[in-house]
Image (cartoon, rainbow, N blue to C red):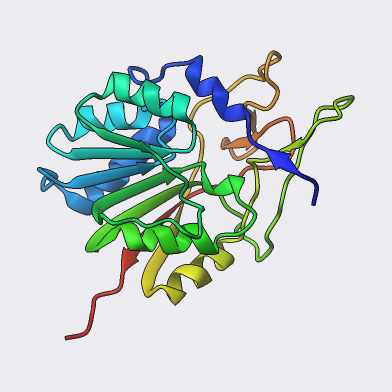
Length: 242
């Protein structure tokens, strides 16, 4: 594999969706309500790869009494999140580091679109498990392959000679499930379909767009021309036998 980089996340510095939530934010909040009901007061929340803080801002409006935390690898994004959410604890950290030490466990852990950057899942799966309280739940949203193949994607615009860009890997549901089982967790994959029509973005072809299928559902792709199958992996530690 060629040397890779991830620069596309810089777009979060140029846009603010804290007041206009993305559709999958609403999906995650719906799943959360199904999980915790009305008992959200003082629950501790961690957003892994919090970017510019848009999800945490929306989450705080939906669950105003929760304790907000977030991490991201980009210092500029961490600064942006801190400015929007001064009450939250936001830090620079890498969830895929094999030396990551969680230290604190949370009731609810979210990670959206981050796992597609990584070519393997062992490190981040272990770190997510170590973040969860025994009664906690993790919601991992993004592209997964429902078939038993791990697909690694590297892209570079025609004519460029720099490093390849990563961020659209499609790791098999089976691979991630097997790894969480090793860490004594249950996992289920809940499919999600984009409900809105998204046009092609000529200024940034790597942004997703939709094509309407005969079934009426939206197929999502981007400049890679690879179909995006979206799921939320819901992870819960198995009860400890007493």
